[in-house]
Image 1: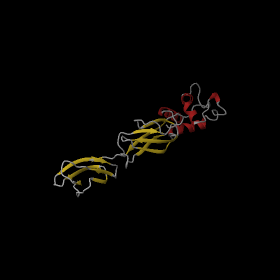
Image 2 (image 1 turned 90 degrees about the horizontal axis):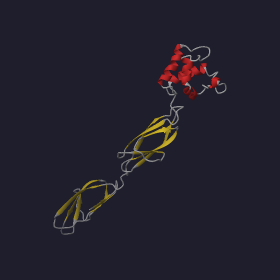
Image 3 (image 1 turned 120 degrees about the vertical axis):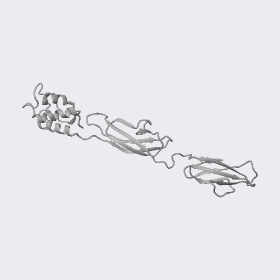
Length: 233
């Protein structure tokens, strides 16, 4: 017997010997036929019977497998995106999950080398293409996966409002008193230690110069720094 096939068009060609011909053939207990060829078969288990002209028979069972394992396979790619943290370079991340194929899967980013890890990190803002390959070599791609900046956190937003109201007049791109510019998000983040020293501790002198902020406002700065001192906190 010579089985070969794909998902919906497999074929079997059977040849019998050892008895008296001519032979007839039956597949899965179907009607006997003079030809040993059976066509339009799907992958699966089959039993073939060959019968001689004297009524003697022989049986053979086998599994017909697909010669094109990716036919009918649809791999679904699901990304989970962690956006970039403003003022932190290459801080984005994409975690990939796949289903619909045969595990284990491998993964690539922008047509790069496939890897066993399903996580891509150290990414900047941009649009990416994800690729997945299953254990049988079946592949799928997902385009237009966007990594964008994460939004401002509430603690940073509160501190930014304090800085803009009390400090930016003297600390901006045009008038950077003491060489300090606090007019941008990243300058606030990079200057958080100085902000705490001056605006919370009054060391070596208070900021703003008119005197320390009220305790509740100083606490906002402390809470933000304790949370991580980032734009997203």
